[in-house]
Image 1: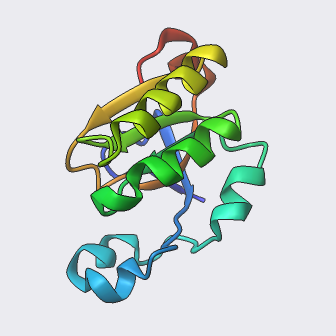
Image 2 (image 1 turned 60 degrees about the vertical axis):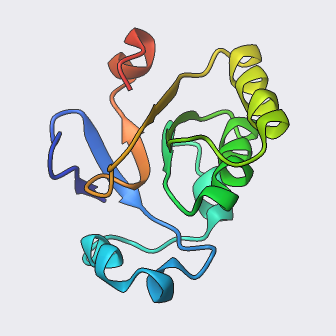
Length: 128
């Protein structure tokens, strides 16, 4: 585990996953993860100490992995636009709402991508 480069007092970077061969597709962007632990998606989702996950991948995969995060009961930050399937995105939002989980959306999070163990304060204050 390592500290987030930009928010070391708030986030610990537990690891990252490249389930869609992102290291080969995007070798320059993938370098940001050098020194962090590579994990499987299953390992991330089943780790009870991980409270929040960032999903940042190609648009066609965004909602798929974000929904997996929501189903696992974890807070979520995802790259925008939220995927390519509006129905699937609505399902994601409903799942997060039902479980009272935080959804944050934005662009350009490569500096903290992967899975994060957040300070419980952030989850309570919805500052993710």
